[in-house]
Image 1 (cartoon, rainbow, N blue to C red):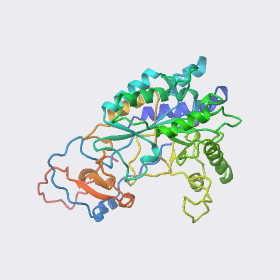
Image 2 (cartoon, rainbow, N blue to C red):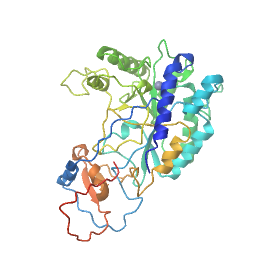
Image 3 (cartoon, rainbow, N blue to C red):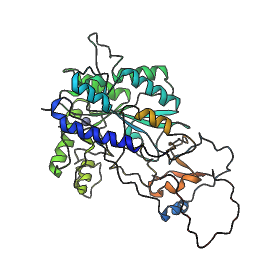
Image 4 (tube, rainbow, N blue to C red):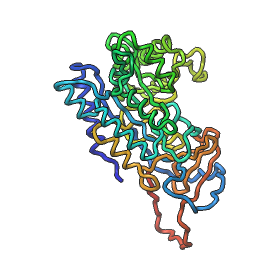
Length: 401
Ligand SMILES: [Zn+2]
């Protein structure tokens, strides 16, 4: 399957459109795509074997559902679910997938479930030692901007079954064993350009606490939602600090240790990307008590399914997300076929102490990313027939990269 360039282009254009007309309607957000450059495989990939893998027991029994912990991980990006909009903003939001219907969201959850996906928080898929049940593909569902349609109480005090959270809670109730309450909410604090998180004044603390209590992730989407493209270090720090301070004052237990770029727009000066990760003094540990914030990753606002943490291309400063432009999420649920193809998904071995990779995929592995886990290689290669290699033909292996 080739990469759907048309989809990237659409999302990209949509992002530009929203930035251009952003002042016309709240919220001023878009799905700007910042697709990272994906390096090609180098000969160095062969050094993976130096990590002393546990020998593969045999090639028998390896199939589409075998563990494959170098596969892709879908991180999905949502904004509004079933917002009542009208006019131009309604049409634009619908076209860009910034406001999808409750029915569409429910259908997508069903399709994810049927595909063997399993919900996790973003902060839980940043290490090779992640906890996902055997045979499952982790999916991180993310919501940006703390919009009202993500979490809405009704007048009688119940959670609206048609808001994003209501739909997620109902899906968990239907599948209590294999669909836990996990999703990541990239929130904005109340500030001059923003309403209270989730848009119901007086209920914001109750909502934030509820999310944390249920196991959902509360994370940083900046303070003002201004583009960070041309910000300096102090401005970036203020954007990160303001959100953390506001949320922690209401929910001290909120983890607040991942962030999503407003508009997906990273600082032009790459040396400032680390400022978004932490304001700890240089040379100190990221968890320094002197730090006001510590982010374990930076999320973009578009792209492909993400790289696994042990993939050599994994970069915590550029984590891709799949946007909800119409048809896109359905496209990837179908396209990430197990067992074959360039977008084969991560399938867990169920053991956080081991990283299980297929021999055919091990070129993707970075031993330095194993995070102390043991490497297991399953031999899925066809039996080799001995053939005299021609010294004049340099054969390049172009597996999925
Ligand atoms: Zn946003």
